[in-house]
Structures are given as C-alpha cells and as structure tokens.
View 1 (cartoon, one colour):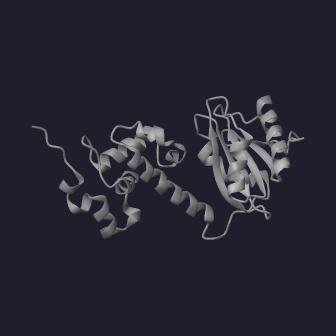
View 2 (cartoon, one colour; view 1 turned 135 degrees about the vertical axis):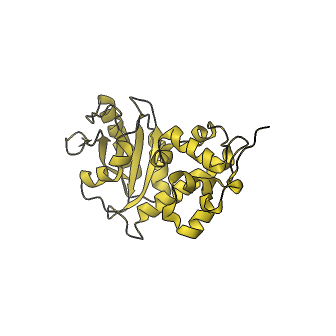
Length: 229
C-alpha cells in the first residue's frame, strides 16, 4: 500500500508555517510561501508539492499575476477556492507594491511608464493590454490588465477600458501592450485601436495620454512618434 507524505508528516523545520515562525518569512522558498497560501494540498500531492507544480506550470510567481482563474483551475488539485486564494494573495502584493507606502508613482515620461511594466511584460508569450490609470497629477492610481490576446493581437473595447477608469475616478490613462515578437514597432491595427480609444476618451472626459508598445527590453511611444493624432 502506497503512503503519501503530507506536510504534517515532515519534521518541524521543514514545514512552511513552522519554518516561517522559527526563522522568518524571508527564509521561505517561493513554493513554501505559496503552500502557506494554499493551506492544504490535494489527494495526490502535499501543499508544497502542489505549490511547486503551480509555479513550474507558469514559470514563476511573477507570471501568476496574469494567469486567469480558469488557467489555475486547469492544474490538477487546484479548484476554485485555491485559485481564488492565489489570486487574492497576488493582488494584495501588487497593490502594496503599487502604493509604495502611500507614495503613488508619478508618470513624467514614456520611460517612466515603460519602466513600470517592462520586466513583467517583455517575456509574456501573448499580447497583454494594460492601462495605467492616473489622477490629475499624473500619479498612478492603479495598473489594470484590460485584456489578454494571442501571439499577435489583443482585442480591446473602449467599454472595458473606460469602465475600469471610471471605477477608479481616473482623469487620464496611459495604454501599454506587449509584442511577444520582441519588436515594439506599432502595427496599423495598434494605431487604429489607439485612435478609437482616444475618441472614446474625449467623449467621456478621460484623456488617453500615450500608448506604449513593449518589446524585448525596448519600447515605442506612439506619442513620441507623433502617431496619436
């Protein structure tokens, strides 16, 4: 008869929760941190093993930020409850990072906007359309993923973008999306979508300040290239 080792069967110094209490949170691996969030494993895997499978499936904790509930639930042993726990924990971390202890980042240039997302977006294998929502002082109120597309396109409807902006009482937005090819030069479709969003923003009183295309450690600002008009 096979016997599955659970976290409770491990020595105290190897259990994630006890390890955190005894040695501090910084001593835990990514899998151990995620195991604490999951709390329990599945019938086949311990919490640590399940956490390791999740991280391996998506390539790391950072990549989990843009993983959908459906993608998480596709992992054996992850149901809606565990997927919700993961998404909630990641969102807490994202909001803390964005708040910078109460000091909101200020966007003064396309470089500032690109720097906020470059490391996260440059390696994505699908197009992600992101909006930085700004107040009247160009401080970042929030960063929102508006849509996730395919290898070569990301459909964006004005309704989805400005619903998020209105909810956050944003005065302006900066649009960003990545090109998985690594070449940030905007396509004709990118330019057309930008013009449509600018027009929609004018109608409701929310200005589209720029659209930045992220490539592999480089970017193109449509505003800097005079492509917004």
